Image (cartoon, rainbow, N blue to C red; front, side, top):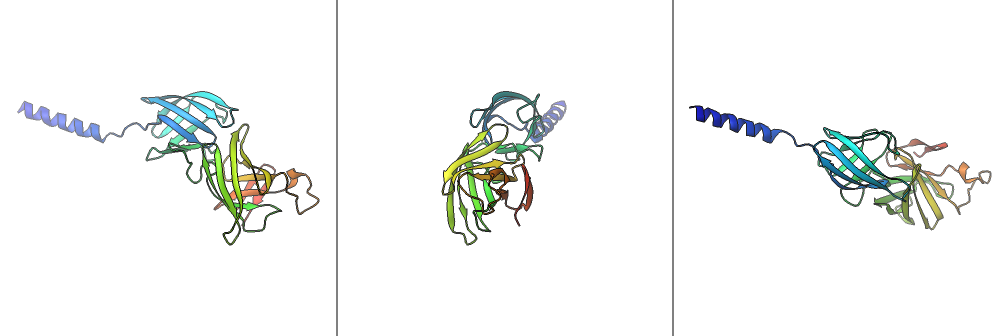
Length: 230
């Protein structure tokens, strides 16, 4: 009788142990929006390295996992930082919605992370209704801009660099261009060096309100002005 009771207790304990959720695993190499992140996890402790695109910021990190959240110890170039692991364990995003720090275990970032996604564009040298579809793979960004009828008007191929902010620069039909991303990744400022403004009073490129909004957004403050695109 005692043996049977013992076996029942062991069986219940095994079932409870099997039902206990495993600690989320942040280990591995991650392709991020601004860096390649390599993490090693032992229990709930994490160590790793961050290699910033463009080589400006390379640093080591330590952190503690609680639930699906990894909180890094001390300050980082982005300030206090915590990231949240997705349910399938394949992507992460920053816990603070005002700061976009995200990544994937693959090579190509998902929509909404980095420059990947659909964008609405506005500039004096572009007609209304211009959109762009961009894809970021590591530090490389590629895609195209389209008119309101879906016709391709320009290719967009560029490289991301991360310094005090992050941007991607390239050369195409517009000449040399740079897209300066906002910290929440909802918008960017467009600078195209060789394009004259239609408004001749805006000769200084800093006064040209050229920008892009992520699909679904209509107004975002971009550096020195409100980017408004219906």
